[in-house]
Image (cartoon, rainbow over all chains, first blue to last red; front, side, top):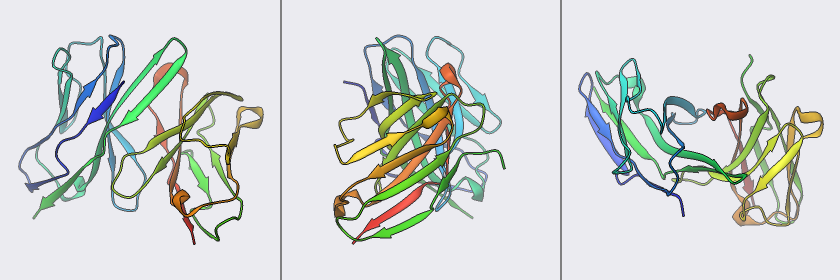
Length: 116
Length: 113
């Protein structure tokens, strides 16, 4: 069964510092997508970054980058130069369509606190 | 505003009542998804549509839940005979076909008393 595990319920980072959020997943598929979503308090979920499993190059979006280790089934998110507005719940998600069956699975989230 | 919208944003109801939520996706998106999110948890997939066709339903979607997407535009999620365990945030998202990236609405928070 496909699962997504975020082992850090909460993380803290000083403003301007770098933080890494962990995510591991379990799958037998070779072609899938991975995502990091951000959910600020009482606000809607927005996409931070996505990675196609067939791409070896790690995705980057400005201050956000991932470390995608396909063999290890690991997909961590690095936030550089952390800002107060980065404080939110971060969800790792996995998506695959196989034999007509669709799966989109979220982890339980990591709450990121940014300290001024 | 061309994002995903949901209505209502909040709903309080008594146990046993029926409730209906609406989701308006981004206009050019073919796929529409419903999720349930409880406090401290990630979203749990409920169902999704490709245009007007409901292609998959999670086992979380009991017989009391029904979703429709007439004409492949907006979607409704109805919960019949609500129970206290139905209290949650119901999220809608949409995406372009195989693009996989989902764009979420603000959610409807349901409280069943």
